Amino acid sequence: MGSAPLQLETCSLDTIQQDMERLPGGCRRLAVQLRIGLDPASIWAVLTDYDNLSRFIPNLQSSRQLWRRGDVVGLEQEGAQTFMGLRFKARVQLELTEHREQQRLSFVMTKGDFRRFEGAWQIGGASTEATTLLYELTVQGCVGMPIGLIEQRLREDLAANLRAVQQEALRRSTRMAMA
Image 1: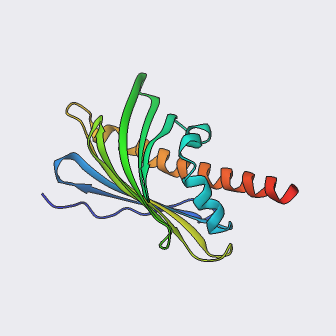
Image 2: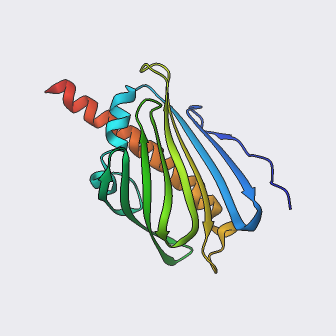
C-alpha cells in the first residue's frame, strides 16, 4: 500500500499551507506552515514556554514540563475536544529536543494514548518580513481510534495551533513594545 499524494491547501490570505500524507498502518503525516511577520525570537519564546502552552493553544487542557537535561525536555500534555458528539481526550509524555541554532524543536512520544506521535516545530527566516512557522506531525492512533474520521479535525486543529502561537507571540511583542 503506497502513500497518497500530498494535498495542499491555502487560506484566502495565502499564509497557511497544509500537507497531509496517508502512510501505511493508519499513520498520517501532517505539515502546516504559517508565514508570519514576527521576530523569530518571539516565536521561540512562545513555543518554549512549556508550562503556559495550554493557556493559548486550543484544545490543549494542560502542558507541564516534567524535567530538563540540557536541551532535552520532558513534557506532559493533555488535550480534549468534542468530536461527532463524543468527548475525546488524549495524554502524551514527550521528549522534546531544543535545537536553538536551527530554531527547531523536535519531539517524540515516550508514553501516551497514541501508537505514534512525533514531529517538530521549525522557525524559518531571520527577519520579521520572512519568518515562517512549520509544524510537522506523524501520528498513528491507538487501536480503535479511527484516524480517517479524525483526519479533517487534525488538519483544522494544527492550523488553529499555529494561529494561536502567532497570536500569543504578537500579544507578547505588543505588550513589550508598550512597556
